Image (cartoon, rainbow, N blue to C red; front, side, top):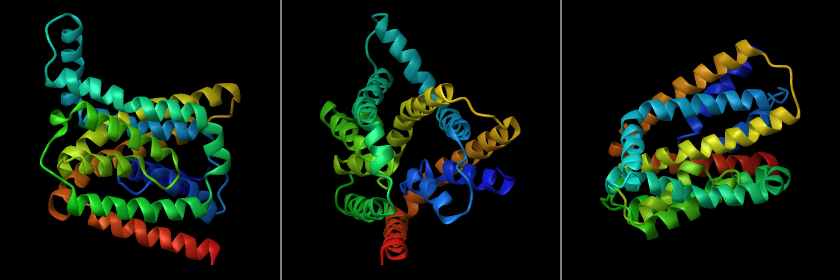
Length: 266
């Protein structure tokens, strides 16, 4: 890989991982729209590590409270809101984990076309806009019910369809059940932690099965750039949605999806 490829892929991963615009769509399309060779599993793992580090650092206080409260609850000291939130994160991760393991090969081999990506960007983008305008409420991530979590977790499994966006579909579902924009986004970011761990772990397994020559400098730079861009993305996304809502991302998804369909299929 040359350095331009390293920078572009790292920034695309870091920014699109947490915006409701589909990181998989952008990462699939980068090699399609350029003459670059595939970056390889090792670099993909490094980019995921950067994104994971960013969300953990940004939410380290909340994560620490969730961990300590969960340990206290296991020790018989009662379940507080932080322990409950930790359980909700685990529970909401189960559907995408199960479906991902069962259909990983099908999705990788048959669902990464520009047609599916374009339709998903538009369709789920419009659904996000509807949820933001007509369904959002005032509840935060600490006020979720079991039913809410099951709905959001089930919706997250749809993110396995390229172009859907994991953050986009979880925020959409959270808005649908009456969460505020900030609450929906924060819960979506917390849900990303186990999902990124599982996705990175699955890629790491493939890496061990098919050892590759590793450019450690490129991986280090990619990890740092992915982490920095992801951290900034999380911060400014939370600022933007307070003022503008989800509509800028809805417009982007629809225009991007329409361009893909026109460019590749008309």
